[in-house]
Amino acid sequence: MNRAVRRRPALATTALALLCALSLTACTGGPVPATGKARAADPASRPDLKPFYGQRLQWTECATDGYECVRLTVPRDYARPGNGRTFVLPVARAAATGPARRIGSLVYNPGGPGAGGASSLEEGMDESFGAAVRARFDIVSFDPRGVGGSVPALTCEPAEAEAEAEAEADGEADEEAEETSEEASDAVAPLYPRTEADRSAAASGARTAAEDCEEHSGPILRHVSTEDAARDLDVLRAALGERELTYLGWSYGTSLGTSYAEQFPRRVRAMVLDGAIDPSLDWRQRVISQSAGFRRSVDDYAEQCAEIAGDSCPGASPQEIRALIERLYQRAEREPLPVAEDSAYAEYGGMDATAVLDAVSMAMYTPEDQWEPLSEALREADQGDATKLGALDNEEETEEETQEETEDPGTAEEEQKEQEEDETPEPPADNGDAALTAVNCLDVPHPRSLSPYWDALAPADQAAGVYGTAGVTAELTCRDWPSGGRSPHRVDAEGVPPVLVVGTTGDPSTPYAEAVSLAEQFPQGMLLTYEGLGHTAYGRGGACVTAKVDAYLVKRERVRPGATC
Image (cartoon, rainbow, N blue to C red; front, top):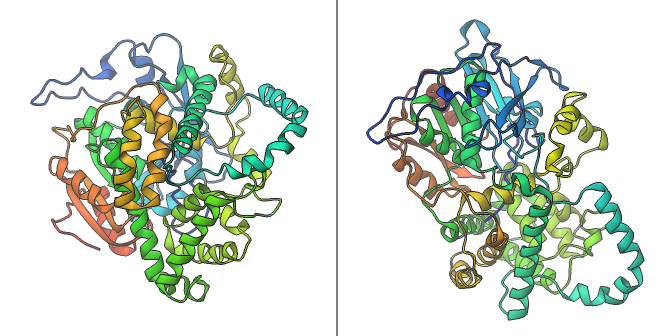
């Protein structure tokens, strides 16, 4: 299931924060020793990759005080790194608070795919790390290729001139649109497409979405896989002056870390994977696993709402809360739920069933922050106003904030000009949705015919209800996507040191069972269990989780089997 992961700093409700990087000297680490099976030669020794591995980072102050920024250049195609086509990636760092005892750089990925690490760091993501880690490490992150401030970046939206032409054409067709508006309002997408008409409409919409991405980002669509991003991570490691990588990945960041460990097992110093994704699952297994996680979390919300949200709960009992949510889904399938004129959903005539489901699902990520506003929004939606519900999954930004996050005077404009041959339109300030789809579709093989998707609907419904069927239809876009990535497989990282996997028992997006599986797949893999609700644990799971993860990152202290917080 394609769902955005929006991690928040532990002490704030802002979205992902910007990255921080470090080290003024550049080096290339030693060669990767061969393991029992033959591995590819050390990429740093390849003459055509040496210019990338030998970069020297010249840090400057970020737009946000207290952080330093720089840009890293990586080859667009690692098979042809000398062809002149590149990605230029924003990198940010927060310097170690105890420089006299500094160990090195700790690189993190906040999740996604589609979340910008550099922006997350500037927004305060370093505060999610324990004091012991912040004292000993520079906290560093970067926008992966195609994401956020990457140049070029993914977009599935038309260029400005094209959008203006479309708007003009739309204006000319206003009369016709008015005549058919009532017809359109009846065509609300169901969460479980049962009829041929519903399935045809779902497949057509997915095909159009894939064609838009191909049209506007075609030159880079095949180059944004997690495997390529992991190779970029190794270039960053070298540019930071680190012989070995210390890494923490949340959610999608666990996929990035796993890929790095598989390609560069001897380059890992310490690695924490929190909110694990199991690489052995195929597309259908992933949908059912994640969808069932969301369904369980919504049940947890109904059962434990009073404990966390108090009097704001939209029902006096779990049964009443479940009935209200189900009622909203059914209403929204018949007709979009009404919203205010200034709502992001106003132009669509309100919130359809998929939008309602997405809003409810996203509120499962951080119950301590989101269950109370969700409760109030559900109550008002049930009374006829879904405006607050529609605002839950839309990060509110002022125009000034957006400019601060995207502006980079001089350098960004020059880099864009250098790559004009791509003719890709400038991406929106937040291209997370496009990146989410692009990476997910490229990483995991999907069937080309429609029948496997329709065959998956009934099992998904049985396992997870509407969360499962909506998850299956969300995967339809990948049917027409460029092929790429590896097939589902168990971790192949012979020679990697002990990796720490953290799993949350009530995680909606990355179910605990996947953390158990991933820890078992790593040689000497360790599992830390957090008994709690919400997505991921480090930075929001309390002192016990922080102490154990920090001890591992700083001292490489192992976590005992069965460790639980």
